[in-house]
Image (cartoon, rainbow, N blue to C red; front, top):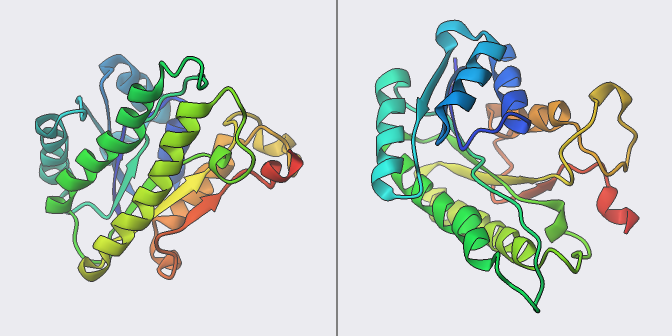
Length: 228
């Protein structure tokens, strides 16, 4: 049984990842600042003892340490860490008001969480970050700071994979486009990426069958980036 920690879990993609991991027989700890959101996810998923939640603010090292300490106490060793902390904003060179918050959410906080998590992760474990297909094609002009931050996250993924290679810990990222839609109605190349389909990739990329995948930015947009 794999032990999974999802930090910054959302009610969209995050809930789908929880459902997929439960289906795969995993034990999961989810965390976010908003405890009410965690309760809603837990009640919706009905994971019983295999789904634990703990509120926490991982923007500080102390907060991140507290969440990972709880994970260690409740789960033991963490086999996979998914960092979903994010946020979205639009700006441009004329008004780059989102720059600091985007770099904070998509770069500094993931660094903090990974640094804390190393104390509870062993050889053979896996870390997953969430990037964006915006970084893999032609960036839209109104998403300057968001694209810069996610592009930096891509390089962070590669840097962490290199640093942790000797520790036997893999680091990868998935890069979806817009996260919405129905998996049963999905059309290849559509702008909406159903969270259930993304969750299947997340489950695989953090499992043992993907051992050869390390330091990769994996598009999960069905090729929508080629439509631009």
